[in-house]
Length: 278
Image (tube, rainbow, N blue to C red; front, side, top):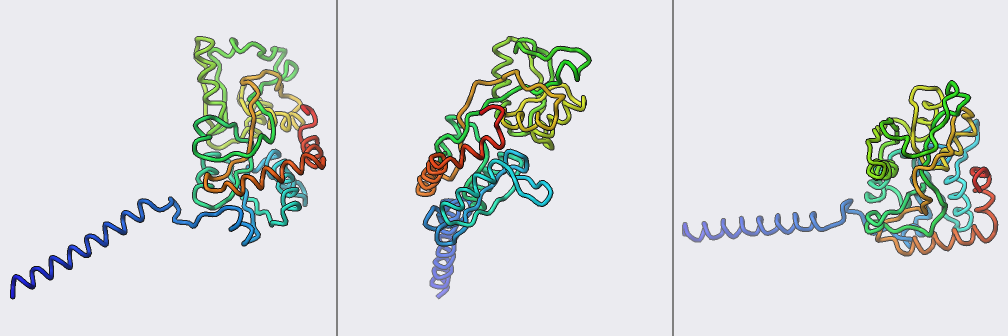
């Protein structure tokens, strides 16, 4: 009798163990978020398209009682074409934006993302939306006691350059240091965006910052003290990102963007924000 009881206990324990192992295996192998796949059919059914962008003139910002921003206006044009309600989420960090995409909190990262081969393996990207590059933000000769702006990248040796956290400029500046055979000191600022760093340069709090040209162009409109004519990187194609499991959404996005280009809406929005470099 005792042995039968023991067998029953062991059988019960074995069942619990197997069930626990099976549950752990399922947890380990399900998607990170445990969410159901969300592609265009699911988005269409809900009627809501969620985008994450930055709070700045390139992304989304409020001026008086008006909402503006390049990415915001582009998303509104897509909303009109698609009939979907567009919800804008705001996040300054690119790394956090990718986390939100992975976790299903948004469907699209709507900001200018330089495409690298590494990042291309993890996400799908729309056809290029804009061409952009990294530029040096420094003070003009007039705003800098007659000191001429740096024009030769060799002259960056020994200089301290500020960049926003997660900026694609970091890798470029590391490579540039190797190219010129000297040290370029790079400080990744966790608090400030490219626009805010440009203000610090204009005020004289820091001497140099690096950000994408589009942000620099928008900043210069408000800050005549800054010079943005020195390139740090070559021109790069930049696109929006979606999850790997959203191929239908990607195809739809490319279709909408193509139609917006053809009907002149894209050009109108682009010129409004980046007329200087159109």
